[in-house]
Length: 165
Image (cartoon, rainbow, N blue to C red):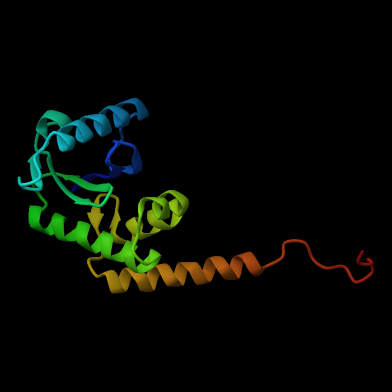
């Protein structure tokens, strides 16, 4: 099971933090700080896989990918394959790239709900739902169409007896 997905910048500011098992907010912040401390102290030429038992408890592993100014971090247990998690990060980033045309940190900050939707199409409740960025994009486009249609619906009916000013 996937325990957490964290996207943070190189200064340690979380841009997305989603925990799939309950953690109080204070504990979440502590975990994010611990993950950043562990990642920022790692050399560039080492593996993207880490044991995370000291941070997240027994049977925890962490895989991350560093793109430009962002770290994409997945925390999971031994039931998940490390290479599959690394590939899932790639799918997530590819989908964000397709959605935002070469994604950057500002895209994530200003389109937080869209990023959440993308993540929810890939992972839900700690379980992997979809591994194809094409299928995820189809679902996101469908959601966008529904949002546009719902925004077009007027909640206040036009009354013909009223004059427009």
